Image 1 (cartoon, rainbow, N blue to C red):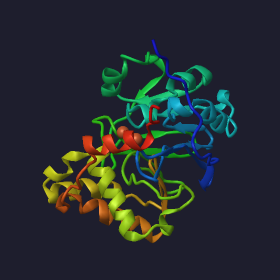
Image 2: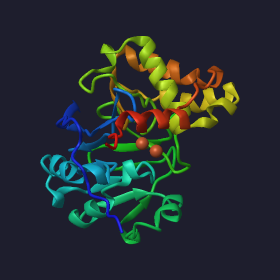
Image 3: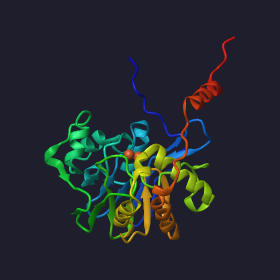
Length: 279
Ligand SMILES: [Fe+2]
Ligand SMILES: [Fe+2]
């Protein structure tokens, strides 16, 4: 029987302050078969009632717990916002709910239906918050708004009106040629390629089936927020004029021809390139 051993990230990037009291927690993963890197981020908001936004991955558990609880004492955490039930967003949910006895878990009925097979939801600590609903966290009213591109029916992004930070979950996912590059450093063509490849290949293949006008109305719901900073699980932060550019690229997805994805021949090449010959 094999067991899963958490591994350290390939490149350590310490938490970054992206707005007042708002930190992004990072993990960097090497892409398979390409010299590219992918972020697996989450977020901590140190307001009057501190909040953890998504809970990282099992593969980075030790570092993630150190990073998060280096910023906030577990006993002070009042809220855990779970964007959806994918393992790169819910990977340390057990540990967080156990270590943070005062935290309420912002989730939903569908999340419990989908995720109870591997997590025992403490129902009395749960708050069900749906798309377009708000909740008060003492010094601000957070708003849950579904992001343009998503890979679970449970996905809601999170907007903080006091800082203008929007947690966009899996939208704006892109690989990077170097994990230290920001979005402004990327060649615009590479960024467009990365956004398209990940959106169609790793998050939402149904983008090609959409009615452009209806999808546009959906994108309006998040873009009309007063966003000053986009933080997302699989992207460096997006700020300033790049926010409009990012929405523009994502809005155009229904007109984009989906890129071809790596198939078995690529896997054969990866295995051949990494296998040790027998003498
Ligand atoms: Fe996801
Ligand atoms: Fe994700």
